[in-house]
Image (cartoon, rainbow, N blue to C red; front, side, top):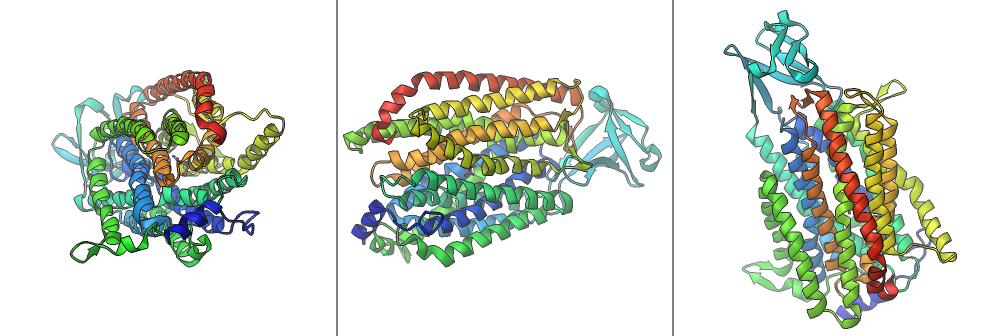
Length: 579
Ligand code: GLN
């Protein structure tokens, strides 16, 4: 069995029934499409849900969000290694999908929401929002009625629209009252548990499903890169559909409908994978099936011990999400340790001819950090910025903020085939940039996108809304940059991996995706504005805050990209003929 498995993997598939690719790609495409549908559907709502439903501060929400989107990928290193050694990718993906279904449905239990109360002259008034998302109206409720509220320029005063209805004065100085927030512990617990289930689920699924894509192709099969491009389009088709459907359902009808639909999408993915897994032609089976049946303790065998490790992953994930500030530091330390491990691994465990390839793979994994830490502002600070400080009105429709997440996916769909064609066109003329040069262009672009957005913000008054086409522009520039780096990186990992270490290399790739996401939470936290009931109270200060953080990170990224361009010949040498 071990022989057959290794033999099948090395030979790759000659099947061409799915757009010239093995039909196994079709099932990986569809499963990953639904997995990403659930991931991005939920992600588009998450930061707004944390600030408006649970009433966590901007800073705390950004940290929770950052820890969450970090851990989903960090756990891939465990899911990838367990699959390499014991489970094989097919079982790991199935198990991950089951955890994901549970986690996404768990998110649909929202409870009654947190309550924020202000005390004026010994009496309690509830501060809350009517509606969800950027168009929600802040209101104050007293025992006798309710009124809309707003804040004066500079936020020195709260202005009560209908003072008589609530029995308050027309204006209250903001420094004359305290607010207090109470949360429902049960539903906060359900939130953390659901996030932990999703983290473990993605950990078992994401790297492994990407590794199977690589396994479909023989080492020198020219279809590999375009196979990854098709797979990447599946990812983004899921993301596109979710941003519209889950995003609109969640904001317009209620959080639980958006999260619930994400769960239904994941269930569809699981069922498709179960039904058509035979199409993988045995490429993702356990390396040694007999080993899985060996008893570890009591009735528990190796296979069940692997599944039980999800409980440990969840426990770690939950405690880190509940303490997101130290989590970011811990993850930075993990990143440093992993580099040291990979250097040791390249000398101790890898045959000499593959050694420098492991260094190149490590470099690419690390080079994601300046990219995703900026790019991932999309789901956090850029979402809040769009929600609050952008004129989202298009042809009379105030577009719900999560819908803007679909721009990235939509642009991938339009431009991925063009970029794939461009590489071939350039290759024929022998002017195709090398992988390290493509990476440096990607980092340059992510910085440029933010500088362009800041220019757009400055083109209007200090407290004016930013025109929506600058949001289109930043997403377009960021998407083109993503295409320089992300599918190229996935394909490079499978090409550069030494034999029998594809899961480890893919896990490393996602580990650093995850660590970049953690850094993105820290950056997003720096943009945090002061809020009441999830709404900013000083527009001018908030806008200046976003502009300054975006300028700084944009400039640093451009500096890093120049450095990467300068060292690209060295990396190309490390890649050897895989370049
Ligand atoms: N957008 C891609 C996906 O969801 C890339 C994720 C990543 O590596 N950070 O698969």
